Amino acid sequence: METKKASADPIPLFIPQTYTSTEANKTGSWRYLKPRYEEKTAPCSAACPAGEDIGKIELLTRDGLFKEAWETILRENPFPAVCGRVCFHPCESQCNRGEFDEAIAIHQIERFLADTARKNEIQPVVMTGEERREEKIAIAGSGPSGLAAAWFLTRLGYRCEIFEAREEPGGILRWGIPAYRLPPDVLRSEIALIESLGVTIHTGRPLGPSFVEEARGRFAALFLGCGHGRSRSLGIPGRTWKAWRKGFPFSRRSGGVKPRKWTVPWPSSAAATRPWTWPGPWPASGVNPGSSTGGGGETCPPSKRKFSWPWRKGSKSGNSSPR
Image (cartoon, rainbow, N blue to C red; front, side, top):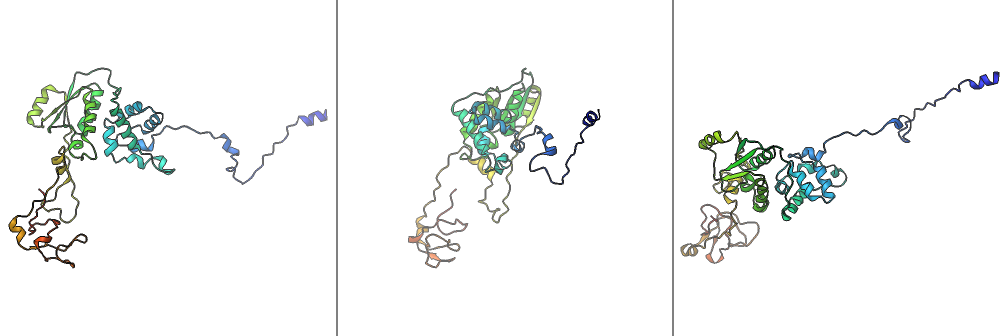
């Protein structure tokens, strides 16, 4: 009986104690930890001004679902081809891939998807409201703000009409960005997609008191997207010179106009026979039409007049700057 009683007594449990960390072999309390999934926004999407779901776009593109990836962009941004060319892509500076090797060229993916859809004439399946509303909304200005407003309001069921003062829609996208950076046909294709939803664009209709009175009775709301873009000064010497041209006004004047070759008029016979004085120091490189040493105020015979630079007011060269 005594033997059975001794065996029935509980065996004491000895737990070893140590001051050594178990981080190396993942024992101890580590075995009770488990990962927890937490929903967060990808840093690239958080940095995107348009709020695109970039992770999903990359996933669909990787699987070859180009149409679906393009439609994913259109849910948040009606200008994938434009942004793929002119956006400064802050998303790429926040890309996690940059910590491994280099960031993913997100803007190139966006451009590829839009160009592929345009090349193959793909029509997107755009999510629109279930009910078409009776209210009509007038939008003043066909720049990126006005066009985007028409895109999203039409998808919500409203009927929209855009009124543009110039002869062609696009605003700063059309008249403020040179054609070599944003071809006009690319912009027109994206505007045509907005018009395909039923948006009407009226050109040559500036905003004025008469327009406001007309819109008061026809439309339930008026969206003002007039722009008012303004150039910034470079803050360098010579910016007050008469030949100085700011970027926006110059782009607006030259928008849609093919570049022409500048010609410099030939000097008249009277100017070709009289001596000519170079108005300043010779350039650092090039042919010196005066002498081998060069210098300001030197006389050049008519037979050696090869320079038309720099153009300077009051120059006696007989050549003039292009107009």
